[in-house]
Amino acid sequence: MGRSGLTRRRALATAATAAGVPGVLAGCSGPGPGGGGAARPSAAEAARRAELALLRRSAAVSAVLLAGYDEALGAHPAALGARLAPLREAAARHVAALTPPGERAPGTASPGARTGSPDPGAGSRDSGAESPGSGGGSRDTGAGSPEGRTAGSGSGAGSSWTGTPPPATGAAPSGTSAAGGAFPHGVPTEPGAALAELAALASRTAAAHTAALAGAPPEPARLLASVAAAGAAQAYLLGEGGRG
Image 1 (cartoon, rainbow, N blue to C red):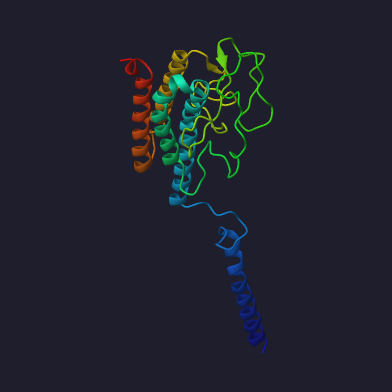
Image 2: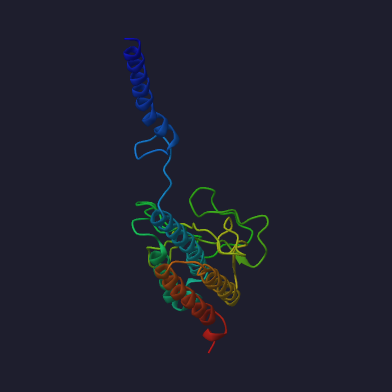
């Protein structure tokens, strides 16, 4: 009788221990699909996110060059319109191509943002004038603006040149102030000087895209290489190559 009771107690203890093992193991394992912890993204998802981030940065870089064309066209529509219009359209296509699918291109305004009447002084301003304080692309060009420059305008990746620049946005490539746009000190009043600054900006833009090729996935790398080559060609056409 005593031996039978001991055997029964041992069996109950063994069963209780076995029942607790799954809970212990579950506590030691990582969170499952429905667990409270944040699951690490897969390698494919991490690569996708990195590619999207690369495209967004590259689109923002090209958007600065696009803004530069719009600012120069706004300041010198008669002198530079015919020369810059096709280059501006190419830059707009680059921004659109680099923008991830389903996202709005840098520099584009929300619907209805361009329905207001154009600023009659947007084409060329006195270097001591002050632009209105309201509006997406307006900026103060009074104190601190060097002589011989006009106020900058803006850009829109999805719009074509109509003589009235859309609002300005965009991140700057290396060596360019994002806060001041493509022309941080205003567009030069001399068309030739404006072209020279645009050529330098196109060259910096091409260099930024070339630098972004390092480690880029094959498809974005091909796109970046194409845009970088086009930017270098634009720099040439804006500089010595366009004077022939």
